[in-house]
Amino acid sequence: MGQFGMNETRTLIKSDWEPTAFSARVIEPEKLRCLLEGANQTPSYLNEQPWYFIIASKDYLDEYERLLSCLATVNVEWARRAPMLMLSVVSLNNGSNGGRNNYAFRDAGHAVSNLILRANAMGVAAHQMAGFDAAKAREQFQIPGGFAPTTAIALGYLTELKGLSVARQSEDARTDRPLESFVFTGTWGRPSPLINEATREASRDESGCLGKRERSLAVA
Image (cartoon, rainbow, N blue to C red; front, side):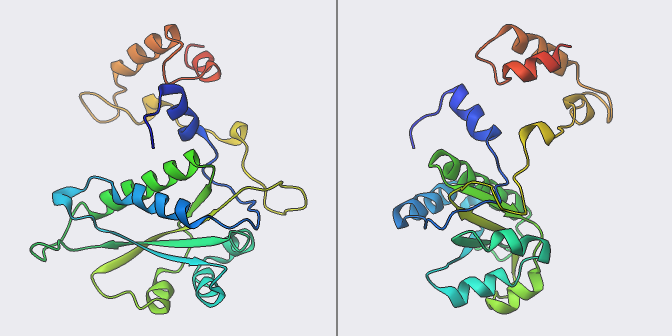
């Protein structure tokens, strides 16, 4: 991928991260490879690269149904419309010395985020799911000890929502925490004065990371 400007990056981050209405269109093999390469290019502690992915498409229905069966019931109805499902798995130990990798979940989460950002840039919708049975996934796919299933992902192209019982959450329905509620300086719970300073700067800078709607809320 090429370099993104501020506006393009903002669009990717603010795009819908939780689609539930997938079309039957399959993900092209070259795009799938590009997504996985995006994950694999993620920096990691000691270059351990602790991420693994189990993928299943509807072209291999048995494997797809096995992965689908690991999802929580609330996710199955909409996730089964996605042409591809993934399961991210983390290696818990360092490959170099066999000791515990305390940064494995951080690095693997970063890799999944890179995969999803690249998916958005390519017009592919991705939805992560914490709602799945990790023990069943371990059994179904013979995941060995020392590895932990971490998140399920549905991938595909979006379609119209008409007639679907599970609707995509609108941007207006989302409520983000105020930055002051979780960004501190000096002591725990003390809102950082840097936030107010950054908000003032953003209100004067059209190229900042805040859009017009967010700026109006921030300076109200």
